[in-house]
Length: 356
Image 1 (tube, one colour):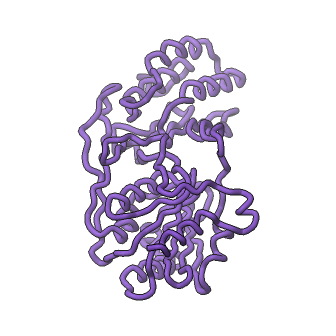
Image 2: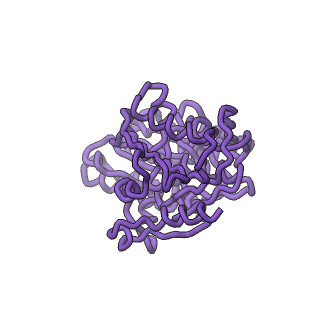
Image 3: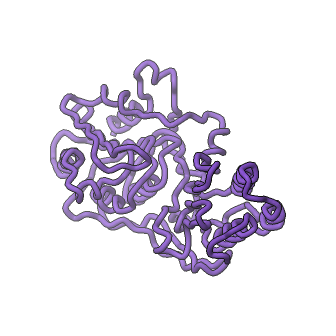
């Protein structure tokens, strides 16, 4: 392949071949990648580097990738006039689904349900222009609540981020405290995931043993179907914690990536119940492209492609990428209730745990 593409024909060839070698969902993907080559290569051969043709190229890339099932898939451009253009096939499809709603920050509607003395804080780690934040506390003194906007909890602790560490200390200390706590609510709504290190750091304190919750595999980097063997995906139990409380996880349409991994790990361990909406469906994690022979790549200086580094399947051998995890108790997003200050999903979680 051309290391530094100088024409749109070269750009297309680099993109097509890197996708062919490094994309991990070809075994379940319905997009015919060979047909894409036949249809689009002649179109790229006719493009110049004029601004109208650059925009036309972006349009072609959007068309080519519109049906890809990787929930993490995203193309960004380094080249004027396309700097503000982002191609995200999964969110484009979801925006057309019945019942679609924009991401919602649940913080203000949740805190009135928490007992006095709840803890909320922002940290110093930034992801997608947002500071990490968490909220934790009790509800009616007998339920323990936790929420964060993305996962970088272990990194926050390592960085000595006092505000986040204080909240984590409050939450984790309750896990080994015998008393009034009867259940745990983990609120993963509007949480798009984060650092894979939090799988063991956070979920490891909630599981009761080392747990296998699915399987992962990457590629050899040599061809369309150059897959490596499946290996077990595991979470390691932290022996300092012995959680025996029932857990309810709140989800919405934007519960994604590491959040979905945590859900599957907790469900594999014990009777974790999911309340809310179907999750986003982005289960194959992103990673440094230098680690695997699969995943994200650059196309010269023209554009960057983010795509999952490994393929994930569940214990029953189901690939749920782009499909998501169905809740055990479906409670749709409800604008009229929210406008009245009512969190119907949280209320359902409270009722469920109090019935135990």
